[in-house]
Length: 585
Image (cartoon, rainbow, N blue to C red; front, side, top):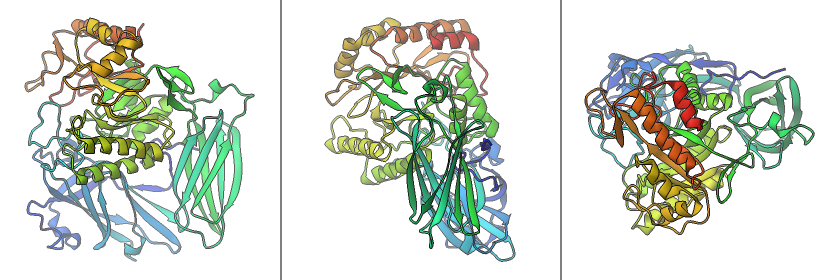
């Protein structure tokens, strides 16, 4: 038996086969004066005088609205046909709504959520109408001028400038519903143990069972049954350590890596009398760490070749155009010779991570940054990070978290002990929440703490890269004393740890559309692009003081035209030639 993996399910790691897609046509309204709550819009469907296609943001063409001037407050409405069944619970899910969200069902307020990158899960059973006709209303508030709001690369100005792009307001990931028993699986976490062939499982139930329930776990590798067991559970949380393989089987046959992305299928059930909940999941067994020189995958040195992935599309902004686009993006990265991505300043759709898990691609993850430091911005950033780690902790492809980027949100890091404390605190909080991955406090410069040192260096001179990072001693000297971007790379005494060039390159191919940002260096032809790329990547790969790299960037985005491919994902030069360069062949 093989448990199916649901590539189209909005939550592939906890998928029930019977789910209802609520994307598509919704009614829409702009609330320019923010009067909708006072004027009872949640019970006045006539106020929604426009149409929008969910989950595309209203600023995008794909939404059918296409208004680029950001609206502070927008509203959504749709009718949903679903009957309520005795003893069952109905949940409404939103993958992400940017930034503040309120949800009503049949005029009853059922949820308030803050955070533009993280999921919303709502039990709407109590609000459902007996006739089966359910009215959903969503209010989203996104303040363009609020620099204490985590926004990532979304511009606070009316039009994109320098390296910031069009905004994404409101619903921008999938909306869906499911029906479950009263006692059901609320969350799963799979954590590979640093012991060959073993995984820790945490199952969190939706409540304390009135009587003990049985939780069943079945795990397969292809047709081979690895685990088939059940446990009597009387509390909300069950933890078990499961040995899937023993030392008689070669680890290369089951360890997950980009070269061999082996996944085990899993089925977790909850039996509560006549009610049964069944969720499909999967596991990738791999370990992540560092020594004083290298990034380690499965306890062996591994050289990350990453592409900076902004995750924007011209027609749909932060939202992917369709589910297949997420698979094609992963395939594109691999075809260009990279073995990973740095997902930059956004939280990717779980289905993108599914394809990274399935096809084999490392993911180093950022989160959307704010741009002003305050207790409010720090609280917002911290809350969102905890929700991000909770959502994605079981994806084997995700191997690292970058808490801050280039001191965004902590702009006075070099001189403010308070901001240093903020970076250290968030680093340790993420590590405590997920000790199974590497964490970097602040990537790019002004290193305070972290499991590795990430450096951003956009020199276009390969010999300068060798001078700065040619061996271990010169790399550490550069980290201690150098200022490649005009900022000190470390403001704390760096302990021996790997140095990764987590942003470099940024080559712009001239001849693009007007308004193109000048970038870090320009060339005039595809041949010149390949020559410059080969020189820079060759310099990085020859620098023994570096443990890996991240090239800026994968795709042209808005006015930032330094991608290896254009916004429509067409290559700027021969893909095979690029791949040979990236792989160092």
